[in-house]
Image: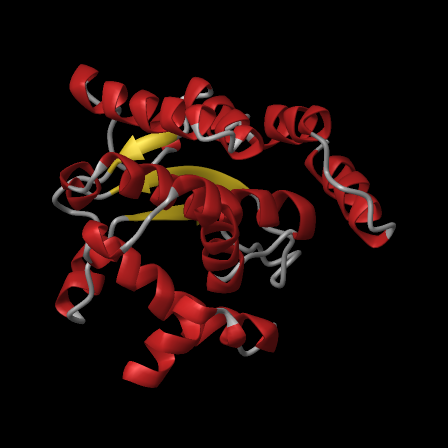
Length: 214
């Protein structure tokens, strides 16, 4: 069923048809068949779950409905998790001097299909995600949802997908310099990962100013 769903999504992509929320519902239903015991991290506490819900509500308030709908579906499926102290990804990113907020975990390649497709398993939030502003949390969720959608449509994802989704949604979300690090992380991610494939993003005023000031 996973392979059939992937092929259907890929066909829509090739035909240049916008992936509808109905199709995402179908893809999500098949891509969320994993056992909860196999998921990374832990279940959110009541307060953490409320923070996720509030960030999703903010997206609805700002009319970013497509992203809010997808995030709500992922959340209702129990696929938004919180990283634990032994999370190797967060530990490595911190060791590298980065500030990790979240990541989207895909399925592992298999011997039969070493090059994919991969499917999204869970979004894992770092403790630092909860320390950011409301619109930062919403923006960071859109970043991860960008990865999630790319895995469903293409069977793979990289930082291009996350940062492009996050930046494209920002006119609605309103992330700016007052949000500090999450805002500058977004600009840095666009400069490093999006501009290479989509050079027109380098001409966006905020991105151009960031690149010029590095």
